[in-house]
Length: 178
Image (cartoon, rainbow, N blue to C red; front, side):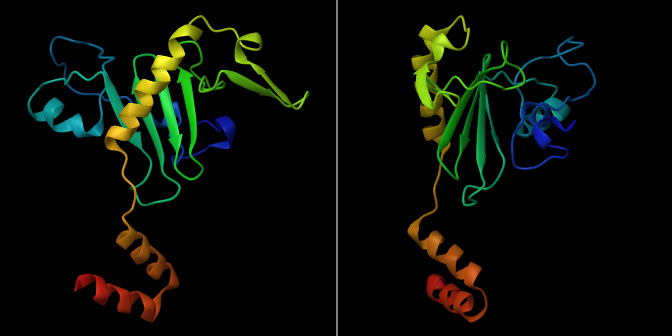
């Protein structure tokens, strides 16, 4: 991390320079460089089986499903989708045209702070693939739905009791175990 956007260390944000970590291994499949999408769950296959898995997308999650500051990143092709659990905010970036993730393509409207009004994003931002974005947004929302999990009511009560501490937590833990 280089201080971009105030981020100096690894944490719960999922910036591209945090989740794209180079992997150095002996050559596999005759490749000197591999640009395939991989995840830490692929390490066994790469190191011990000598196989490079083929994926069309990967998930990068910053926290467990029950934590409020969770941020989910999904990378597929040239796009990266970001979902912030804390406020339900979604972002979509074209990593080819915008590798620093400066402009989210999630909405067809752009809020102009100077005019305090929204305008069509096409009028403010050049992008050559506006027409494909509705389908891309829907695809990423479906990918998120395929793996997203929320706390059950029982888990929410348990989490709340833990935050209260002491006797309340121990009492609720006994009730849940029964």
